[in-house]
Image (tube, rainbow, N blue to C red; front, side, top):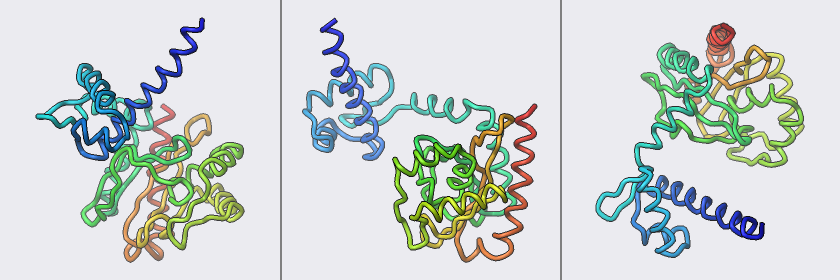
Length: 256
């Protein structure tokens, strides 16, 4: 029994180191053993041992003395992105949104109190902002996040606010809980959420929630673009109507 209790924390620590190495390889776009060891404050031998295990399991590749993440992660990522029916069905709607608006169409979901890009497609005039698949954004400072948050159970909303806080990203970010809850109440009535330069300066977005057959929110469909284009009646009325129509079609498909 004592052997199990002492080995368990060691195993968890080892797993944590492996994931830290994986994350660093992504952030550094590949690295040598010594570079990773310096970045992570680990011994060269420790980093090398973890890299060898990743290499043997085909999760990293080695070019010369530089290690990169391998294509096996692509297979896992594709599985995750298509794991749920709504994820698969949303892709077509995102593509249609980008084509119809010439802006960036997007579908995001909530995970660990943040929102994550599952699908995104850029139209002809779309801003090439950093919005890659898997990127995480603050839930309270984005239209997609607020659209999702409005339909989460109240205790979950409280939990997210307590854990994540309401950090300020621009002068327009909502940092007061009462103000945020008032806006979430309005979103529940309208089924439309707006964000006007709340996360990134000069970037506006509008999103609508996707509700499944069990009345649970399972993501948000939206568009985003520069504030000088995403404004006025088009932003406040035409785009929301378009999104609501697409969301309705998606929800109908999910029910069959």
